[in-house]
Length: 377
Image (cartoon, rainbow, N blue to C red):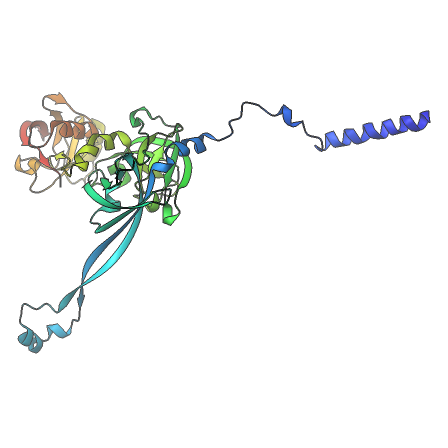
């Protein structure tokens, strides 16, 4: 019996050894970390703001011409119908679109992208809980791609998003995009902030004036107008799908920009966008020298540090003041300038219909040009 008992103990020990070695035994549940939150920070962030995210469905009528040429080019038919008849008849069709937005005021004020609701004849707002409202576009600003839509909440207090501070965002911060892509309501994607102050010109949309937040959180047309959240569930940006070829890259309008113009749009006002009418790039003496040594260069550039005017648009303050392609701006209002972005900021801060003085170098001369800013259309 003693031998058998020892043998049993040996077998049990051997089996335990194999079980431990092959991972068949696990630690008891009580050994798991006790500081794990029941919900992830993403779930908590979305719970904080998700109810305020809405789906926006729009309808609009698009007109186009429908022709039956070449019959109307026949002189005999034109004689019958008259020379004023083009042979083309208007045709209308109704198109639908979809995007996202979020409620910023419990009375029914919604922020979204201008391209989501521009020229819409009918706007329908759907909340996360299924309630539907008819929306009215109060104001749009194409330059910043922002819009305000108002719904009649009929006295009900609607859920609102918590607005954060996009100026406090850092590269590497969590970014949570919420929206309704291709009709899939309340879709959430996660990424990080990959770049700050990505200018619209860098992105390839020269008709906008936005310094985007760039993120690797997935953003597509259905997400446009929805909120980009930080880890605390605060809105730091407004998602915008602007590049179909930007795989793995998303862009958002900083929420601080929306805060600046929200009230103006809500009242149907025009957002001021002063401009002078030039296209420009930074230039240094080395870059100018390299250009001037090239026998195929289009023009000579003064070998100084400043902002090179590469094009002067017609019928603009710059063209009226006599600015020329190849001029190098070195001062604005007696303040030295060497960066195109900085020059743009000075113009914007000056306001519309305000005087501004540019000091430019043209060849071997320095000229002072007086301009009056105009509203960018």
